[in-house]
Each structure stands twice: as structure tokens, then as C-alpha cells.
Length: 142
View 1 (cartoon, one colour):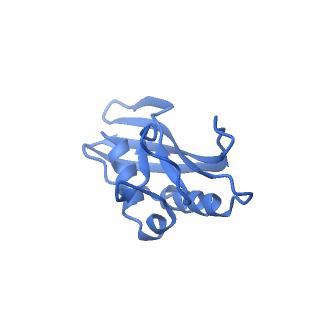
View 2: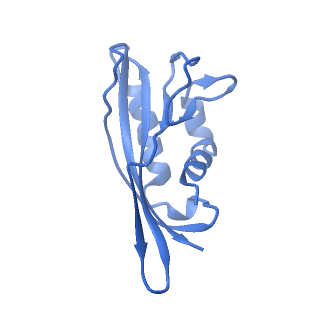
């Protein structure tokens, strides 16, 4: 069950979100775990699908499932306004919150999709601002 692929597909499948994001090598600036060293934050926000912060079994005698927690982080230049980043992160939240049927996972079916945030996400670069949403997915094995 590859939750990264499902999240990436959902993000890249939304034309409204893609119009709000920066690009890197002519593709949307959506990265897994971290942005590559060659990426320099442009005028629009970028997204990072972080590694899972939780992955717990949810099992009964007849069913197997996993409860996965992942952060999706957004970063943008600190221009004195957070509007562009906040707009992106609200869009990300809307794509996942209570939308389990919109996610396709090989080897499983998403039963629950909940999102908290967006909230501040710390950065080590004072020229950047960050936000994150936390996504909880319960995926039943098929």
C-alpha cells in the first residue's frame, strides 16, 4: 500500500492546485520527503509530502488495515504576506478531508481520510514561511 503515490496523484490531479504552485524542471514543485538540492524556492509555493509520522496496524479477525499519519508541508518566500501559501494549504486540506473515495491505493481501499491544519511549519531559512496539514488515512487491505 503506497500512500505516497496516492497522495501525489491526488495533488497532481487538481488543476486549481497546480496553477498555484511553483514548478521544478517543468513539473509541479511537489516533492517526497524533501526538495532536491537543485531546487530554489520560486515566487510560488512548493509542497513536500513528508515521510509517515505514524503507521499502525488496525486489524480484526477478518480484516487488515493500516492507520497512516502523514504531513504535507508547504513552503513559500516570506514576502510579508502568507496569502499564497495559505490558499495552497487550504486547497490541499480540501482535497483530502473527508474524501476517502478520491484516493486510489494499490492493494487497499481508503476508508477514512481526515486532515488537521493548516498550522505553522517551522523552517530553518528565515527567508521562507511554512505551513503543514496532517493527513490521517485508514487503508483497508483489499
